[in-house]
Length: 112
Image (cartoon, rainbow, N blue to C red; front, side):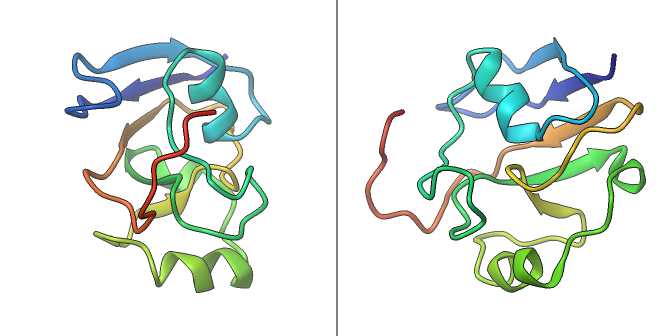
Protein backbone atom coordinates (compact mmCIF):
# COMPACT_ATOMS: atom_id res chain seq x y z
CA UNK A 1 0.00 0.00 0.00
CA UNK A 2 1.71 3.19 -1.13
CA UNK A 3 1.98 6.26 1.06
CA UNK A 4 1.32 9.79 -0.07
CA UNK A 5 3.18 12.51 1.75
CA UNK A 6 1.38 15.81 1.24
CA UNK A 7 3.57 18.85 1.75
CA UNK A 8 1.98 21.66 3.81
CA UNK A 9 -0.51 23.87 1.99
CA UNK A 10 -1.61 27.04 3.77
CA UNK A 11 -5.35 26.44 3.33
CA UNK A 12 -5.99 22.83 2.35
CA UNK A 13 -3.52 21.00 4.57
CA UNK A 14 -1.57 23.42 6.82
CA UNK A 15 0.34 20.72 8.71
CA UNK A 16 0.95 18.47 5.72
CA UNK A 17 -0.09 14.83 5.92
CA UNK A 18 1.04 11.25 5.49
CA UNK A 19 -1.61 8.88 4.26
CA UNK A 20 -1.93 5.33 3.06
CA UNK A 21 -3.80 4.72 -0.15
CA UNK A 22 -4.78 1.84 -2.35
CA UNK A 23 -2.76 1.16 -5.45
CA UNK A 24 -4.75 1.85 -8.62
CA UNK A 25 -6.87 4.76 -7.36
CA UNK A 26 -6.27 8.35 -8.36
CA UNK A 27 -4.26 10.74 -6.22
CA UNK A 28 -7.37 12.93 -6.06
CA UNK A 29 -9.54 10.10 -4.68
CA UNK A 30 -6.85 9.17 -2.15
CA UNK A 31 -6.68 12.76 -0.91
CA UNK A 32 -10.46 13.13 -0.69
CA UNK A 33 -10.86 9.77 1.10
CA UNK A 34 -8.40 11.01 3.72
CA UNK A 35 -10.10 14.34 4.37
CA UNK A 36 -7.86 16.52 2.20
CA UNK A 37 -10.35 18.64 0.28
CA UNK A 38 -8.48 19.27 -2.95
CA UNK A 39 -10.56 21.14 -5.52
CA UNK A 40 -12.01 19.10 -8.37
CA UNK A 41 -14.43 21.41 -10.12
CA UNK A 42 -15.05 19.11 -13.10
CA UNK A 43 -15.89 16.16 -10.83
CA UNK A 44 -12.69 14.36 -11.85
CA UNK A 45 -13.51 14.18 -15.56
CA UNK A 46 -10.25 15.74 -16.83
CA UNK A 47 -11.98 18.94 -17.91
CA UNK A 48 -10.25 21.54 -15.70
CA UNK A 49 -7.03 22.05 -13.76
CA UNK A 50 -8.27 22.58 -10.21
CA UNK A 51 -6.83 19.28 -8.92
CA UNK A 52 -3.32 20.04 -10.24
CA UNK A 53 -0.51 18.68 -8.05
CA UNK A 54 3.26 18.60 -8.35
CA UNK A 55 4.79 15.18 -7.69
CA UNK A 56 8.05 15.95 -5.87
CA UNK A 57 9.04 12.29 -5.39
CA UNK A 58 7.82 9.15 -7.13
CA UNK A 59 6.82 10.84 -10.40
CA UNK A 60 8.37 8.11 -12.54
CA UNK A 61 6.18 5.44 -10.91
CA UNK A 62 3.05 7.01 -12.44
CA UNK A 63 1.81 6.13 -15.91
CA UNK A 64 2.46 8.84 -18.46
CA UNK A 65 -0.19 11.49 -18.92
CA UNK A 66 -2.30 11.34 -22.06
CA UNK A 67 -2.78 14.13 -24.61
CA UNK A 68 -6.01 15.39 -23.03
CA UNK A 69 -4.40 15.73 -19.60
CA UNK A 70 -1.37 17.44 -21.14
CA UNK A 71 -3.64 19.96 -22.87
CA UNK A 72 -5.25 20.90 -19.54
CA UNK A 73 -1.94 20.92 -17.68
CA UNK A 74 -0.72 23.58 -20.10
CA UNK A 75 -3.37 25.87 -18.55
CA UNK A 76 -2.49 25.13 -14.91
CA UNK A 77 -1.08 27.80 -12.61
CA UNK A 78 2.52 27.05 -11.60
CA UNK A 79 3.06 24.23 -14.10
CA UNK A 80 6.26 22.22 -13.56
CA UNK A 81 7.71 19.20 -15.38
CA UNK A 82 6.41 16.94 -12.57
CA UNK A 83 2.87 18.37 -12.66
CA UNK A 84 -0.14 16.07 -12.95
CA UNK A 85 -3.88 16.36 -12.66
CA UNK A 86 -4.53 14.36 -9.52
CA UNK A 87 -7.80 12.99 -10.94
CA UNK A 88 -5.86 11.31 -13.76
CA UNK A 89 -2.70 10.10 -11.98
CA UNK A 90 -3.27 6.57 -10.65
CA UNK A 91 -1.20 5.33 -7.75
CA UNK A 92 1.36 2.62 -8.37
CA UNK A 93 3.28 0.73 -5.67
CA UNK A 94 5.79 3.52 -5.02
CA UNK A 95 5.32 6.18 -2.34
CA UNK A 96 4.74 9.76 -3.50
CA UNK A 97 5.54 13.19 -2.15
CA UNK A 98 3.15 15.77 -3.56
CA UNK A 99 2.70 19.50 -3.38
CA UNK A 100 -0.65 21.17 -3.93
CA UNK A 101 -0.01 24.49 -5.68
CA UNK A 102 -0.98 27.65 -3.86
CA UNK A 103 -3.40 28.78 -6.58
CA UNK A 104 -5.73 27.33 -9.19
CA UNK A 105 -7.35 29.02 -12.16
CA UNK A 106 -10.78 28.33 -10.64
CA UNK A 107 -12.43 31.66 -9.85
CA UNK A 108 -14.92 30.20 -7.37
CA UNK A 109 -14.07 27.59 -4.78
CA UNK A 110 -16.66 24.83 -4.73
CA UNK A 111 -16.57 22.71 -1.62
CA UNK A 112 -17.65 19.14 -2.36
